[in-house]
Image (tube, rainbow, N blue to C red; front, top):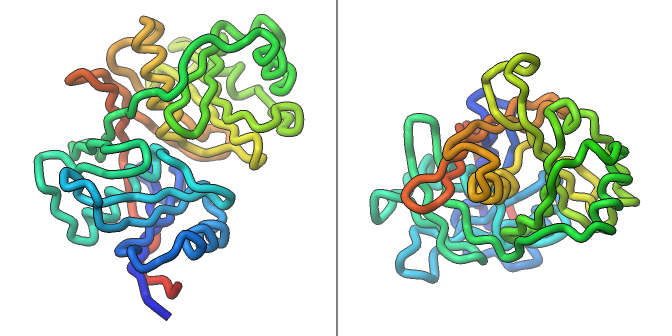
Length: 279
């Protein structure tokens, strides 16, 4: 049975066990689709990734991303966690940036003092949310009508629809009814009030994968697409900090900024488990 190098990396937090974990299998070219899907189902993490040789000559490696139920074309915290694992295993990029190949194309990743940051990929769907869908979302979250101040499709692969609420308190008070919300991939965002919440961040987020019935602790793809929406429409400054995972006892911290014509999504990464797996 072949042996593969393995790391489990906590993302968007410098303290182990307070971010969002991703399982990373390195040198996974010998695995079949079924083996990848079975291992991702077994880890039961929100995402498990497999690092392979690139097919694009501009890329440093190719990444495939699986939830316990399906393959994703892109996801944020697996991108940073997998890059962390690749670098820790001795990966050397061809240029100043690490270039990841995945189903949405090439994703540049930068290294800095605060950790790693990826350039947000283009949205595959944007635009306003239909009133009937917005009403279903409000009902499914148990929110009063006045709690929702804006909403927008912000899909960069996983299917995100973002709903902006009045406050951080409203975001944390939401209680999802997954059956009522159906197959939505739903993100909530609300501003921090400096007088009540402090100045450590400017926005609070939560992410619900309703078809699979869970809340994701800290979500890079959602933060990327929300930043594209908020910064692009003047609802947020050119650079801000978001927090996520509070409702789950995590302490995710995401740095968002518009720079060099792109939205960069960054955070700390730390290895929690290292070894090998037999597959």
